[in-house]
Amino acid sequence: MPEQYALFTKAINPASAKELIDFMVAQAAAKIDRLTLAISSAGGQVPSGIAVYNLMLAMPYEVVTHNVGNVDSITNVIFLGGRTRYTNAAGMFVFHGVGFDITQNVRLEEKYLSERLDSVLSDHKRMSAIINSRTGNKLSLEQGLELFKKQRARDATWAHANGLVSSIREFAVPAGVNVQLFT
Image (tube, rainbow, N blue to C red; front, side, top):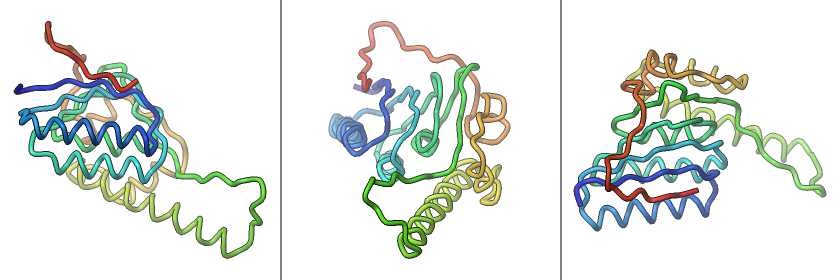
């Protein structure tokens, strides 16, 4: 089985990350040559997205990512795990700052707020480092950090000009190919 196709449209959380990681590991055992991962996801949890990204880089086969809709939030990092990256002409890339949820009975003391801010800033720095590295330095660490200050939607032309994608082209599945769905 030289090539496998998958479509991922889920939110990024521990369960969906595990599902995708398990699939990628199974493909390594099947000795595929290439995985084309079509992605459209609103994002989710940073630790889960970072885990998927790191495992994508570790796979013994080529991973191709293709934005088929919106690649938002931490999904941008997963998308950048592809050795080759494409987007449909109508594809969008949305960047925004990392946040955290507060449960009802949490007392907001300085220590708690300081810890949460440190975590947010650390996530911004590591995602910016990934963006910088995977775009071949077309987006600097500082430019990566700027992407997180305001929510911004970037189009396919911007993504191509800034090294997120190698080219803009429509996604197509060859006839007779099974596509693994993560929806």
